[in-house]
Length: 113
Length: 111
Image: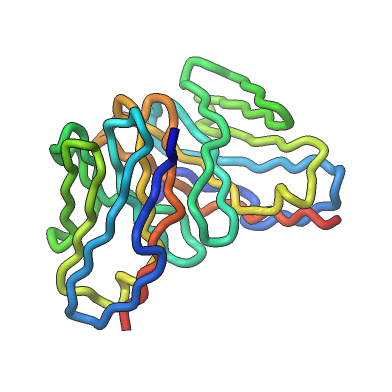
């Protein structure tokens, strides 16, 4: 049984650019959630995908978008990057919308310069 | 927005001592979870307690939940240097399918 893997682990982008982060969910999990964690803070919910549909969204602008694929892997896309988007982006997978706890990946550290 | 608030923000103890961290939240919940995070890495799920449960144990961990006070505590007994990490509580209110995290307690266990 594999865990949650995220790629890339680190990324540096320029303000205004676009970025795609990837996540492979744990085997047997059908739900993927994305979180943004700024330095010294707790993770903030971006959105969740269940069966390839967005299934809940936090307080993030539309330039944050995502996809879930038939194999339950997922992408997070951020357009028009801003300096404040610099953070650790965490992907978490679960079964039946988190009723049994989430399995997190190690995250992607995004730096916007 | 944050839902849970951990207290204290930072805690430093000697190896072998017990560590207690508290979490308060604002709205009704379905369950509350505790996670550990080592230095900027992914979160590790420690324990989940449902709203109809009052106490739960897992190894050296003991979690309590008081829904009337909207609070939870995590006790780590006989702490080890390897327990050094940030600890977060997260609440699942069933709204919007989001789990809301507090800002965490940074625990340092000195050998």
